[in-house]
Length: 567
Image (cartoon, rainbow, N blue to C red):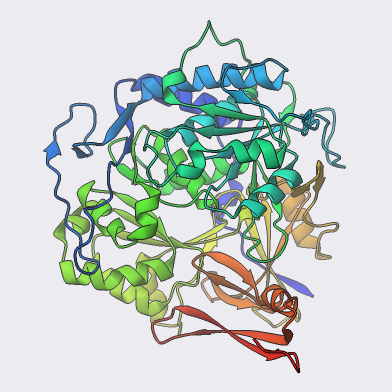
């Protein structure tokens, strides 16, 4: 076995002192305090008018001028300034700290039977030392909204870890994750979007009754602070937080895994992007990714830490009318978008039919991630959006979302010497090392291993943090690279395979197991088969995946029925 090593030049760099020694909540305060009157978040009143025929939807609201943002604001939109968000973060942080320390709250619902200890006891983690502590885990049960963002910063401000809980999940999945994470508290909200489409949010009593959890209902209207906030900033704490968030992987049919993500992983990803593709505070960013996926974190963090305006469309409308996203992009002059390739391909006919000069002018950066990005899709997008920078990012929840990138501006030169069917996943981002572990000395193909600041601390289950790997690959230069550059003791073995081009870029090849991706979500075919076999009328089952000519993934199930039974 040998290593096909390919570290980027930026690996040699160290993060600046204030980057590595500051925390997200402190950085948000510093940025927001410089622009208190600026509009931070816009809750779009509606993503579109109700469609009358097909996906072409027209925005009919009148534009309202604003002196606090360059982003268009429409009648019915709810706007929140950075000042109002800071007040709310201080208020909620104070309340959370009091509740977690044993105090009561007028908006706190408690189960009739005494709740469990939550994760009050430190996690059993062999890497945990006197210099680190295990945070309490606080769930956030709400859709993307200003309240969600405030909840994240407030939990981080308290020095604890947040757990996104998507309200669209089946209740059994929510209960399973809440039990696995052993949450100390769940924060829910009377959303500023109103009750439409969020009935389950406003009726979260079932979490108290069935989950045995304490639930705090938070609203922007409750933002009252009894006095100065007397909390030390996490970055000033003598002990380091082992992890600052818990993200559960897809787990579409199997048991979900909780990934212990770190603040340094999020900050490293943010500063890398800010260095190469900076935001200047005048851009409009779209928060449209479900909180089930780790990409949503950079969507709102990038805006909040650079004082850009974040536009949040109503998620229940996006689910009902997916093509209304095109209208949101145009109506709010969105400058940066992250999307999975399959969804972008579905939007192509609408975009090509509209010939929108508005989108060509406003959309400066388009990030594709979560799936294989085909050459044919790039060809269509580069024709449609000639002035837009298009990136292909690769990563997983376990590596803070992204660990490699490829700027498609370099593609024409590569195609002169390489025959490719998909866009390369490129080179490592700053402070990350990506290795290919190959079977022979002559092979340029191998399994992707990742180390560096991006790697999370491990998996969490029932107060136990389990490292991703028990041993490093037996390759001398890999071990030396990780230990010497970052003091990192862990490599994450992705299970993905890639090929290295002559210029050093990686091209994704696939997996040797039967895991596929659809709409950015991992699906293990064996788990679907096992679920089908559990039906009393099914003797056996086989699931295969295939792509149609439009490169959309389909799953096909073949099953054998039990004899002498009818379905």
